[in-house]
Image (cartoon, rainbow, N blue to C red):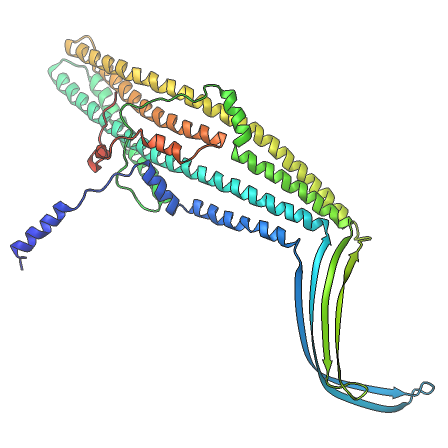
Length: 463
């Protein structure tokens, strides 16, 4: 049965009124990653767990209060014997109930191990804060990398398709010219070989794009239809300050991995103190009350007792089989290991800062050089086409010029994304990467209208 015309028109109107799928920008992807990335979620839970190290260490300095109670049914048998002969004189049996309770407070006065554990708790909290900051910076980097990887994959696929179309046109032209005697079989065979290679490159580029889209989906927990691309023209901001040594100096003070390792060394140092405390005495303030009641006994009557105690309790370790000395030697070795790891982290941080600084400066230069190369290769292709039409250039020359142009376009695209990631990694190496840096990258994106589903796979204009 055919639906009424009015219902059909209403359905069409609703379809027209539906908004088009909105293109996601970098900040949108980052917000989705904050909500759905499981690595970030695990880091937050780890942070919450490590925060409890502080209260746990502090609790060792506070008093402990314990209470206990008991209730028994007693069945007591007493046998009297002759001290000379050992013969039994009499046997008495007593059955009665008894109960009691105990409450005791212990306040540590001097426990070196507890003082060290308290210090370790505070260190663990500071370390957890630095680790959470590292995880947040890592989320920023992974969000930007996944986003730019997809854009780079889209560009590579678009250029591969455009190159294949251009080679196909040249192949058809070579065949026509060969048929009329204006081209050799070499031109036809070369164009066919280049076309086959271009078709394989298109398949590879499409597969690579799908892999990168899956990586983005894993990050944010859902597929994204369209991403906003970069503007055609992009501002290449140099590092500020323009002195790599100042960046190295800033990293020495702010790098988060360094902060983590510094706290790890302090923790290991306190572990040495905690193990050495095994040689020291402990002193506690002890206060308590003990109550007991018995409904019967040897003397035939019951009674109750209440005892209050307050005082100090001293414990002096004398010998534990060498266990404490062994633990001290172990913790000293661990401390030296932490010291070496800290020094290694300092060296690696310096290297990373310098490498990323160079990646930003050289990346900007490379982008500018490739931008000029785009103009040069386009002019070279135009000249080669004119030469081909006039008979002074071959079809192979045209294919080579086309290959140079599309390779330069792809290199230019990839260089821009690498430059942006180098900027973020430099900030991360110093320890200052934050959401504002993503805002700066996001500002370089085109308007959302430039990212329609149709445009996602199209060949974008290049300078």
